[in-house]
Image (cartoon, rainbow, N blue to C red):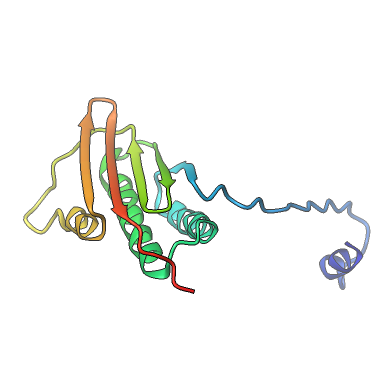
Length: 156
C-alpha cells in the first residue's frame, strides 16, 4: 500500500486527502455467466473482457472461446445498432457452460426492426456459422437471441 501511495503522490504536494480503494477480482463461476450493460459501443470492451475471464475459468479451448466471443459480441452489436433507435437501453448476456455444451442468450428490451437495405443481415449469418443452433425471438418487450454449440475438448 505504501508503494502504491508513493507512486500516486510522487512529485505532488501532500495537501489533499487521498482515498485508496483496493479490490480483489473474484474468480467467475465457470458454469454461469451474467452481465447487463448499457447498449452502447463503449460496453463491448467490458463484455469481451468479462466473457474471456469466464471462458478461461471454464477451461474453454481457444478456438471455442474465440467463436463464442465473436458470436456474443456480434449479437450485442446488433442490439446496439438496432434495438433502441435514439433511446437508451440495456443489453443482457447470460451463459451456461457444461462439460460438453455452451448456451448463450443475448436479450434487449427494445423493438424489433427488420434489416434496412440489401447488404444487411450478415451479422446473424456469422452468428449462425459460429454457433450450432441459433434462435431469434422478437417480442413486443424486446428480442432474445439464444445460441448453443458443442464444446471441443481442451487440449493440454
